[in-house]
Length: 67
Image (cartoon, rainbow, N blue to C red):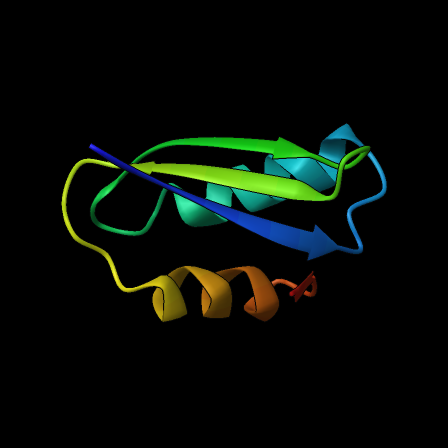
C-alpha cells in the first residue's frame, strides 16, 4: 500500500474534513482518507496506483486549496 500526504487549506471544521474524505473515497484505488483541519493535512492510503493529480483535482473541485 502507498500513502500520499497533502497540505490542504480552507478546511475549517470536522464537516470540511468529512467533505474531503467523502469526495476522495469516490476515487478508485483510495482505501482510506485521514483529514485534519487543524493541521491542514490530508493523508490518503491507496490500495492501487493513483495519479496524485487526480487526488489534488478532486480536493480542488470541492473548493479547497492543495499546496
